[in-house]
Image (cartoon, rainbow, N blue to C red; front, side, top):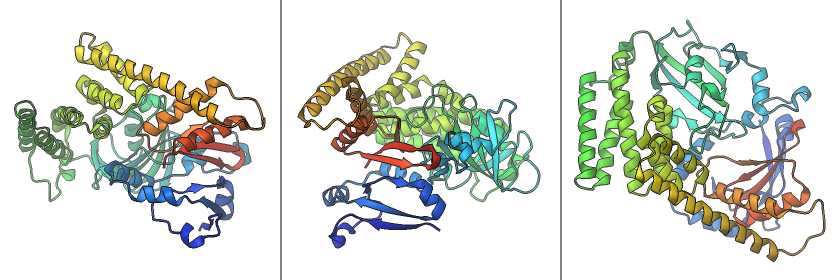
Length: 467
């Protein structure tokens, strides 16, 4: 059990402790995780700003923020610490520590496994139909980027050797019913060198926590639930009808809201239907069209965050088809451009431009992006110069700051603030005292939180958090 003493550093306790559940609160000194994990006790010194608390209270309801809050309920601090305090491991990264306690599933070590809870019965046979729950993490990000139960309370149904990520498919193929296991999956078996959207960085190793709920070699066993009333031909026919009606509402009536309802119904019919060998290809193609059309409609409605979420879902559910869907990726790139996610937008738009070099819409969007980047870069330089000219000179504490450092850090923090990234922005702990002070000042100006963590023998970890 962890005991936490709270101190506000203020004499007015009644006012300071008027905190609302879930409201973000700043620590005025770093939290020592090693002490917390070792002794079960630590002290949190809170920096309470009543004005910021009030502004949070008056903020409008944001469904995306609710989704992020649900993700936070699945925090895994082993992604930060590696779950080990051994001195011999102090120079290892968290995933390197976790890897030491795993066994190799593939000969090259691209998929590693650790059983958290033993299952029962036999190992799932090849080509079986499975039901799973999973959570997925990237290194140093304790908040997962995907939690299956938040997308569907029912376990997700798949066929081994089908649409699952290669590494996840290989890992699940080693499990037993009821088993809970961790899989550390190299990027060659996951999202590749380019990553996926703004949640999964380039060359990212992924930690999956997977629960195998059930499996069957007979697909009828997994489709015999009381709510599974529709036959495969029924589903195909209804999905096709909704896709057609959605197209008509969008193109003929210019009614994107009604079109979205039809596309959503098509998507949900497929996701609620448990696939078998004969069903998979046909329904996957229909699902690909549904995701594509939903993304286009949400862009037309200027709901760019939902467009990005849909595109990322498609990359999880039907990765092979979504990866080749030019219209889906173009819609995703346009949404990222609108959200000022310049790097991610450029990557996607350049990719689709290579595949369709004569497409005038793609060319126009790329030119728009390049102009925005140029203006943003110029504005960032001017803002940084004005900010540091207005600062009073401080006593020299270390090496002097360079203009390039200030400009680079300002740009990095502004991009992070504007992005839809879940989790933290991790910075190099090797900064000088002056550089840290500069980062703190920039973070304060942007209303971001500067956090230092002391993680056992690994020294300090410097992170920037959003409010």
